[in-house]
Image (tube, rainbow, N blue to C red; front, side):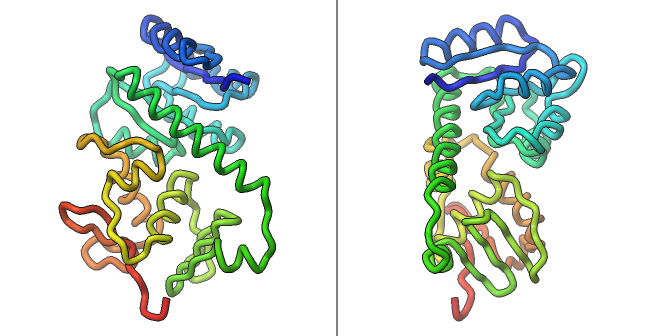
Length: 242
């Protein structure tokens, strides 16, 4: 069965161009032009992925993203004409999984869509193959001092208090922590999380790292968990005894 994609975009020409391109790639695509009725459209269609514009009539894409996250668990890719980095940060903080600026090159958009869908499918496979408690304990839980990362339950605790992370934030944290002591470049991270290469311009990893630091209460100048290694990437710090 073809994957269903819902494009929420009020630019009719752009929406039609993107929809026609994705249909040629064997996706089932529907277009919805308004923000104030987008939530109902998502509930009715239950798409595998949502492409969401920011500037929409009736309700902004940011508000749509925030309001649908409690019930919609599929990937959300925000697409906007704004080149302001703060828009990318806001979108990711509200639960978006990816962010692209217009104009969008079709093949690059397709690469992002395929990577998002692959990641979602891998989560479903993991959830459908439960393992024994002993195996999970040894393979899916990492402890760094007062920080506990539980992959099976997708939970993070600091001092036994839960840390609220989006799916994308948790995936990034697990990737870094499971490679503690190794420097991961932006290219490494993008390939692991999205299956695409770093183009030298993508700021989403930097924005997500910054937000993850805030969630963990980490200090950029004196980090306990995530260290920036200039011109190389990011390093999750090993703890003595770990």
